[in-house]
Image (cartoon, rainbow, N blue to C red; front, top):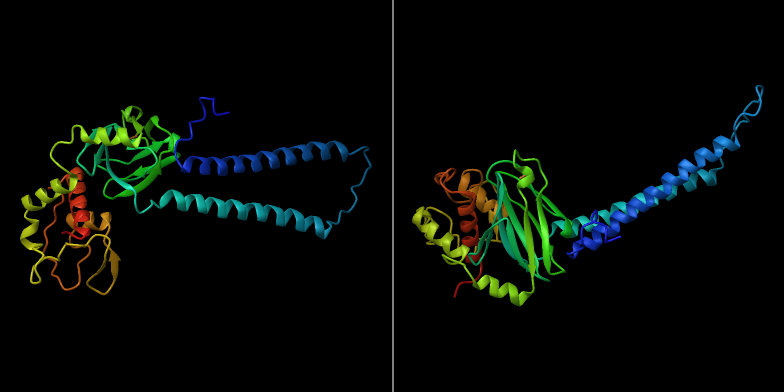
Length: 311
Ligand code: CUA
């Protein structure tokens, strides 16, 4: 079965789970399709009209039979629902210790940024046996990040972050596709995910990272854009203190609160007035058009790095 080129290899922790559910659904569907089609043919022959004046008997359904064909499909549907939900929750919730990679899709390429500063186009190098969390956005239209071998497919949308994750279980090179029609060269928006042994991956990381980590690039941009003139970190500053902000709960003007994540930071840079932190004035200008998605990622990485207690 796995030798068929129709079926992609199973190369992530999610793949066997998705496949098991898939084959269960196919199995149930095939079983009932055959059963029903078979019974239709069988009954059509068995109960066909034998003479011109034959009159059908009145039929009374036995309660037990009615209950059986109500309860059995209900049970099967509930199994599908609970099983499907559990696979779905696994697929959408990245483990906390996952390695962060930032993805920007654009017509027609995939750009990857690793936290230590490595950048690549259409190739993504990841370590074997380690959860990798992708934070993705698009510079133009909707794309979709699809790695069949990992059973991972997630839309990549302009104007917001979407995330997905995987944990590769087999070293090798796997196809990466764009799975959302995005223009003339949609079919050429392809690449590879290269899964490496951890030691190989470490030495790969060691080569060619120029310009320092993402966070340090973000810190430089933070200074260059003048963010630090308001976000001084002092008690009387015009902007909120960003030290330790990431992952923390923030109280907004009006009393609601949220947890500061990537999307919140992104929005606060591009649309500062969308959510005002309690106790501050809506005076921050927008940086829409002044920073690219790739630069925004560095700012996010910088603020994330501030979340760890600095020594
Ligand atoms: Cu990008 Cu299709």
